[in-house]
Image (cartoon, rainbow, N blue to C red):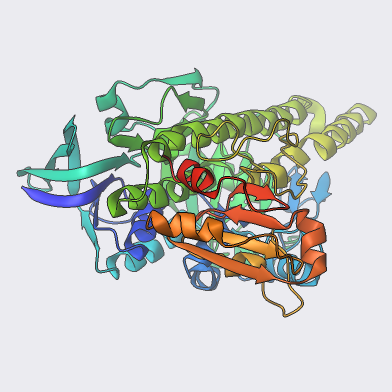
Length: 537
């Protein structure tokens, strides 16, 4: 029987991110995946700003940007009849380079530290896999299928099979199912997904075209962009992938072979292409009743399924992995209390619930403007023009709901967590607006210091106490209380008054995942009690 500290089932981006986070903390973990290796299939396509901040802390953001879409490529979104005809609507959005330039000039806390990055899953997954495999404490095993599990007070025993069907048992202290929407781990635990299932049944295809991107604009068609929504009765949606040579198309059609003709209709002009893949998928808005049982946890699509509208699927899963990783490490290192792992479901399930809601909000917006389609949309008549004008007018309002999710990305805040101090009230949770806050439970807002350094970059892998504005409020008792429990802790002094004014407090305590757990203008009255509470005791 093989032994490991953490067994991760599923080597998609969420599972591999968790393995990297644990490996960088020196935790012994094993990552297993049924597939023989990463597949060249169209799935997620965007790491949002918060995910890129997470990858920055792992030392990976520059590598991911180098592998993804070139920073200068426009990100505009179009509603079209076809790519060779004048667009009905153009929604301009900044490229990565433009976003990074805006961030570099920001003097308040309204911007993320990192811009988004367009990168296809088939590019990101092998990159993350190579990082995980380079870490001494991480074992990566493809061609290893999870079959079943049994758990007891001391750990979990998983039954697995290799590609030849040979049965093997792996013993771990904890197991994490990152094994997708059909999660065998979740089913083993008897945990149900609830919500709205099978809302729409579509086909998705992946194409390779050497010339399409370079030919844009085609005739009088739209310029270069990221998404091209075709105003038809089949929900056709063309997406540029990170190479600019690959494209994906979603549409409601009867047969796989219909996706070739659908691509040609969307482009509207002859183009050389090869159709590499066709698959089917269903739109779901589902949330697991629980995020685990005992020593077994769920993360990513195993715990929540959203419509890709809004780009919240994989990115929510990366947030799950980062919330769980340091807590598992704390338990293995001996300083985490029982409330620490209990807080995982409390914190992340509320985010999953909110993001299911955000995805619903965005997808309803898209459905609303698509419902304005009429068969006369191409007619050169007053009625046809009225259809085009009306659809564009509605899309100008409703399509923005998909592409403007900065509040959901950055503004989520953990409420009711047993390891975060409770302040009554708190800012509203907004999908499309981000208002920086240091309210306990929120992500520490990004702020540039006069030195050019980012405050986030000064947050270590343990707990960090920020002393702002040259205050002498902290007398060292908090540090002593953490060190008495062998908890990694550091104090960071930031004398700049501007930082104190923006963050609003003299003292801010931040945990390893960069979420605020306590704030005050004076040292806590009972430092030992605070240190105990935020570490799960």
